[in-house]
Image (cartoon, rainbow over all chains, first blue to last red; front, top):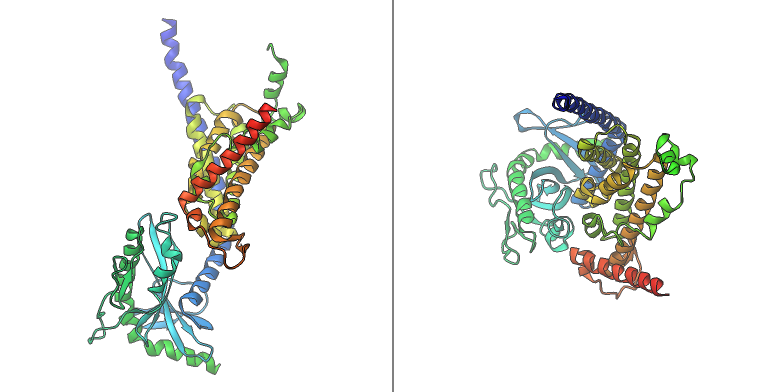
Length: 234
Length: 218
């Protein structure tokens, strides 16, 4: 009798102790994570901005300075000064003599492992994608992550055709990923063997993003160009 | 009670610092019980992120940091954590330090964070850390646990670096990104792919065990 009476009491005491331990550790851990996050957030923000700028210079060959533009209402672009990037932005790049080289646009989509974030440069004059860079991906190391460094794959993006159709608001041919070795047209992306899903994901991201951005950028070509002239006059 | 020396080690918070904290706790992780070459623990990051020397070194140091911090916390809370929820508590503690490490690495270098990718978050399930928490830190004083973590952490980093250096040298012809061989060197691409990790690890294990066997016979 005494045993059966004592058992539930000690069990309750044990549960309380377990609860205390878990909650206590949880609070300590949460506090440490919050402190680290708060401490590193400003540094990470600066580093990310630096990395983005470096990426813009990579996807737009031969540029000398960049200007961030924000997509406002009525599909028009306005130059963005200083901090506070909200909504949709595009980054225009200019050659040393002030000419518009192209516009870099960020895009993202589902990859094999997680969301892939890319940056690509679009040249409205040539109507081509001229550069491509993976900002963030968690694709399988050794296979899927070849989208970041495989030279043959990256070569697809130094002249990927993104021509507008006659109505100036849709694409003539949407960029699409094709099986490795079957690329025939300039708007096709040659996939990587062993990284089919990641390659296709890039094709889908490119297709969806260019379909949206290319007509917009083309429409506002003057707005991007004008800004450069203003800058050179200053 | 019968063994006063053992009891003394468990009484005070910093108990072991007053006993002589034997350097053996530190040394054993470096060589005799090396986590990779002898215990063969934590193979996932060992094989995956050791494709270049710098990645291997960064991964080793990140793991060592998490190991050290989790050992300290587990050891200081060892009388407070009930037995039934100990594994959950250890995982929670380890996950916290991994998340912190993730932020810290981002703050140090975005490129490094990109190179290590998903493997930083996978430190959580590195069995080396959990095994040190369960087998050592939960039974020993903070001083001993720190020494144990430092020894194991450095041993792990050293092993990863051994793999990373060989793989980068053969697979990329460079060390720490600096070209090492003359221009006409043909890279062994397989060495930086996952298969190369297995080859390199196997060769290191052979060397390690051969030296040990030789030592035992003489």
